[in-house]
Length: 324
Image 1 (tube, rainbow, N blue to C red):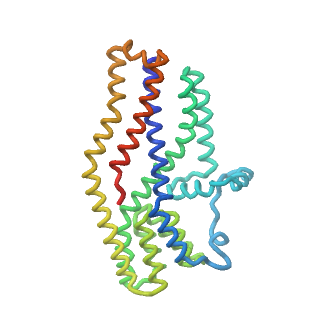
Image 2 (image 1 turned 120 degrees about the vertical axis):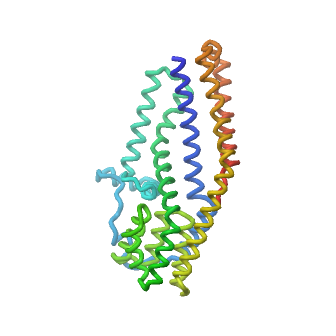
Image 3 (image 1 turned 180 degrees about the horizontal axis):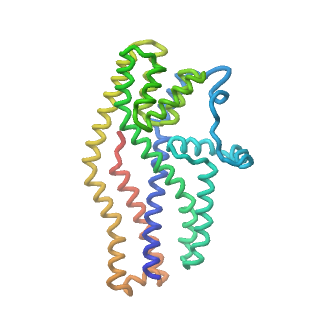
């Protein structure tokens, strides 16, 4: 039972850290100052299509396979944001499936403490962590996909520039990019070309592309195309400048990551050292450590230590996290 409680404490600590990290990544990527400024710029430059818009031409995404659940989900606030996150993550899930998984994990977390005789406070936190686990998986998949798109973007901008210099129209260039570039960026360009082919205006299709892939560098590319359509100019040269800017930023980001590697390793050591020491003491002298969860004062000290560790982890994370 002592080893089971120790393993539960370690897993609970790791789950809380992952949940905090996932919430912070989602918030900084969608509500940060830079994201808001670029979104305002795109909204001001993109003209909404009149008459038949994208909603009347393109296939509407479904929130659930069940018709009655589909209607119920469409009345809930925030479901559209959750569906946009699923689209950005590239997962073949629906909102109903995601919420169903969260509900199943939540119910299991309510039954599990009754079998394992978990203390009261962890029993209250466990349902929250179980409900947040599918959202963490979603944000993790979204981050990995956006990172892969970001690495492919310089080569894609060069490909677009070369095709434009060869005399192709921009719509045909998007089709060529969708057929020849690697995934997942090829799928985004292909979807943009299909929207234009089905009658959506160029500005609206590019605006949808920037919403599906909320990357600063891709939004620079979209803004460059929109500016060229409004005021004219050499679009191939603009795309070449975007490619050079993106490569320089990624190079600088790599250098920063190398410089911050020592700080990240120190943060991991400082975060895991108390847990490792506690595990070793539990194996060497179990009676010495058992006081922490058998004595009421020890339980209070244990939870106080967990809280202080969480604050320290978040603080160290902010110190070594540098956005470029």
